[in-house]
Length: 120
Image (cartoon, rainbow, N blue to C red):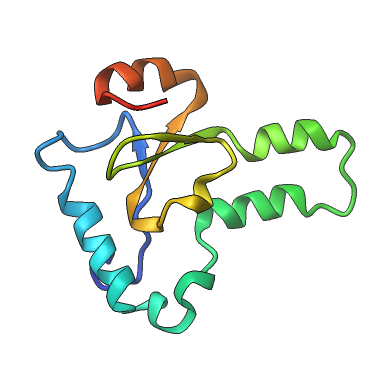
């Protein structure tokens, strides 16, 4: 589905393939994204993916009792660029093209840094 453009890649550490196989899914995702097939054909870069949609739902409530708490709950994963492995943090995931995003739960970042040789 990823290769045909009808599913977005959503890798979450630690449930990722071994390093030698890790390129297969992002390569298929990048091909679909750059060739604009499937959902990418119609919406291109404007396609709202699940993570962004989930944040919009959580933050788009008519009333938020505690906006800071809502933001904390909406953004709980750090994003890493799979190409060169720098962390972009909780909020700047949009700087990484969708085929190159790796998500890490905040409480697992230290272990992921060791396991994946991430750049701060």
